[in-house]
Image 1 (cartoon, rainbow, N blue to C red):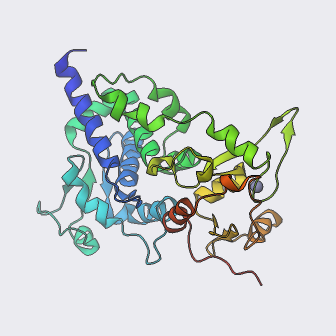
Image 2 (cartoon, rainbow, N blue to C red):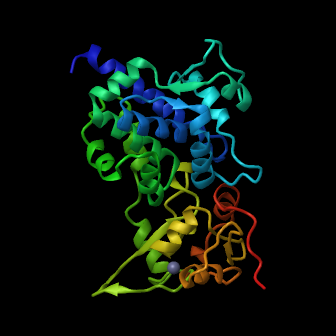
Length: 318
Ligand SMILES: [Zn+2]
């Protein structure tokens, strides 16, 4: 690849990484990454990335509720929609050609605002589908734990298997990519999982699931309390051993833990069947602690999960 060909690609990847780095003090800010994923899904399925604010607003808001941090007053998709042009990743077309007022939902609707990727970037991504997949992976890894990636892809109309397969095809040629790029984001300590599983004696700390297929644990995982995407370390004190169901619910903010290691269940969670009732009954139960006190979940990570992931308020059992 010549330098002239590689420049737009590097420029694109750098802008995407810039978007991921927009995090302050561990506060989750997934609005722009979610909007971009939504636009990439459109580009993949429709051949163009056009997002019409008025008609797509409801879906964008629901995605923010489901995959964004808890926000008791509700999420506002207009923030990212009207601001992402500053990241040189987004353009807004309006019926009168004027820029609508920033953060104003009404102004976006009245102006028939349509957001989209710049033409050059659209062309680049259309000519190189693997770059689209890598962009999706970079956004997912930079903002969410692995357990949520397939669900987010499905929501924006992208096939997660293709994203995984296509991701490996792009060669990143920047000299500093190894330090600042996806290798760094992906890096994880191989000891984390075995350490956490051993600490909890190979059972889910919430329900006691300890099933094995022959000699190996099955459907049992080491969950990060503070996500890796938000500098959560691979330290057993930032981990808890959970079955796949409780891991997913923990990452979606349905379940949480309190500093005194009791299980919290969100009041937003509901379901009538017996399996959902079993989750609801976890409210205020004690989390099975790790075998050694030095492996107990650390309060600073619990605090991060409580403020950035768990959908408050918690249920109070009768
Ligand atoms: Zn469980």
